[in-house]
Image 1: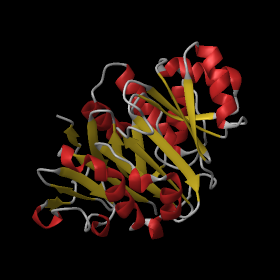
Image 2 (image 1 turned 30 degrees about the horizontal axis):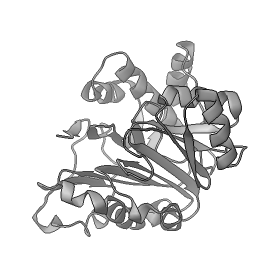
Image 3 (image 1 turned 180 degrees about the horizontal axis):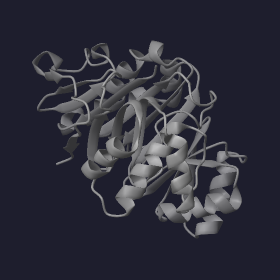
Image 4 (image 1 turned 135 degrees about the horizontal axis):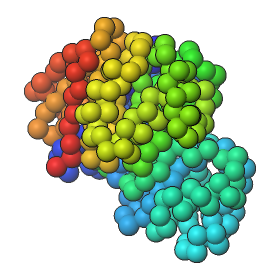
Length: 299
């Protein structure tokens, strides 16, 4: 049992409240996943300054300041680092892939947990609400955010096993449920050269989707293929730099509810996570149908 929340803002007047609203949603899901949590924010000007690329790390063996200095020398342009223990957030005008390559050369033990323009991913172990406040999520701004409270079932309680899994540029996946055939899919992806950072079944799905997108599929098609290829019980929320999508398995036993207004679209494992959103009384509220892909794009 895990908890999923996500918020896609249509009204720019709400952008300054993204972190506040997402924190309130996350708080309602603590009892569904008390051991660890993760969150991703699109468009925060502090964590992802305009005009820069952002790379977020776990398990850096170097202090953030020292890592930034070494990366600056490596990529040839200034790199800044923000220490949000246990996550380090890197920013630079350098390309994200150059930053990632620099990290792997300088600190190969560090785990890249997110990269791309405007995207910051934060993960940690402990009470989800306490983590959100420690990271400063209530003050975050932006147009989209997802978060997850985890009750570990398929792998150990570690920060790297927390969701979201972000394995493609600007792409995140959060998951409630489990996949029964993920190991066979993982071996097939590995035969095609895909590397993995954890033993988590959710990472397998995230990398499967990333591979589909990299080979030209749109997000609708990639999620339809998930339904064809993966067995198990699952509700997925997938976000990209311009999209927000939800899909469930054929049985639909993992809970999910969607609310939509002219100002926002939100998804959560339970309605109580949506109850505090502005104007929810006028929202269209519905449960997503099994195997149907629901997708909204940023205008």
